[in-house]
Length: 418
Image 1 (tube, rainbow, N blue to C red):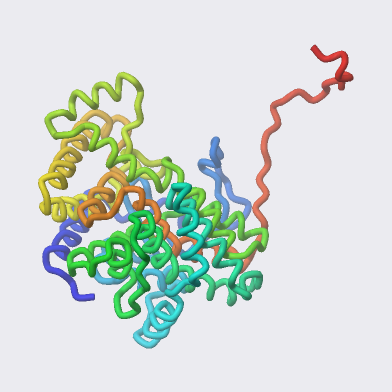
Image 2: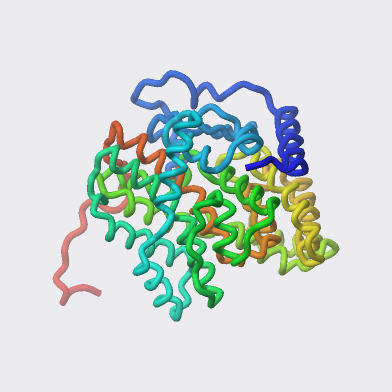
């Protein structure tokens, strides 16, 4: 994909800004040589727990780092494509030309999905399901129709991972079109996955600018440590369940508003605010009623999310397309300033990836309900890569719970109860 000068400049500036504000020291307790058992302090929600080792990705929340297989996310956005990033995550290194050609050829071959699945999505439309529920159903059906699905070998599961990376964009595109009352479009193997995703969702061949921005968005969302949906996928697969079932579980986890659904909620907030000059009043009311302001803060990041550093100027660029888009962006900028001034220094609360991604997708003409499925079309790379890595030395996940209930309660006959 040819680089576009204005977009390349955005990424370069974001990278320079990030590197000025952080140093190069990793966290010694979470990087480097390691031997089990893991010394850690575990809090509710498994916060702080060490579940495995990995070579796939590293998030340094205190400094705002995001690294895939040793390569900084800014460098990948500047120089790579989503397809190349997916290869990197799955196989641990950037591909040679021949490796990439073979991988891309497989992705082209696997993009189509059986017509029965498209028909089932259409059949469910009258029930008005959430698009993530439709996506979960579709992935489960793909497993039903794949005779290799129950082969638990790393080789077979890797092939399924490649299939799902290709097919997820087709499914997301079909769901978007069916929701709009239109006929789904067949994938175009001559287009990159990101560009074809935009085409299959909107019904229009994307501009080079939209194609490049979507490609970058997919790179940014591809992996992010042991987040809830990645952990869900890995837990399911650790029982030697099939990859389709595991990914369906990851989709269910991502659906939640505290995870993948947050960018849709951000857009709802911005539309509710209405305009930049109404931010103060809305924000004060939100603080008074203890309402969560969506798109801010992160369980890991205590610094500015590096993904938001790229998506904010992307939102600025694309929002010039209409007065409504521009008002959303300008409202977001004022809200960010308000939150960061009050909570940035004291509580390390800054915009996360969700705060600006919805504005970007909205400017492309994508319905807000489809934002989380786009997330899934990207995160499929990280879900499957980490699951495959763990599968090579698999041990079923089996944490314990601390029992805090009574230990000796007499059983009373039903006639004598209360």
